[in-house]
Amino acid sequence: MAIDGSFRLILNDPSGRRKITLNLATDGAKLTGTIGGGIESAELENGDAEGGRLRFYVTRTILPYSCTLTADGDAISGDADFGNIFDRACMRGSRLDPAR
Image (tube, rainbow, N blue to C red; front, side, top):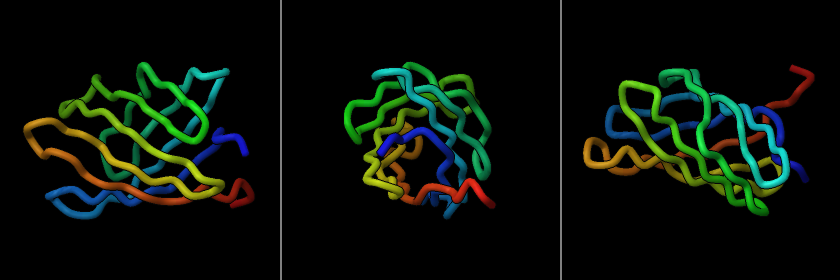
């Protein structure tokens, strides 16, 4: 199953739980999209997708971070690495129903 589409995730970081939306598109191994909702909205940068493994960076925000996720069907999970400030924050979620 392609990973293209929108996902709703819960990000658990030291400041609490945040609901975020992740929009993904692939072109071969290149991954693009946006992230937003409970965190500062931004474009994904230097994204790549290999099988169900996704990696991207968000650097044009107040607090830059990198993400490594695994997509398995409609489920997605992984973590965001905020470096020395917050360390890692786990996130998990599922694909949004396009009919909603």
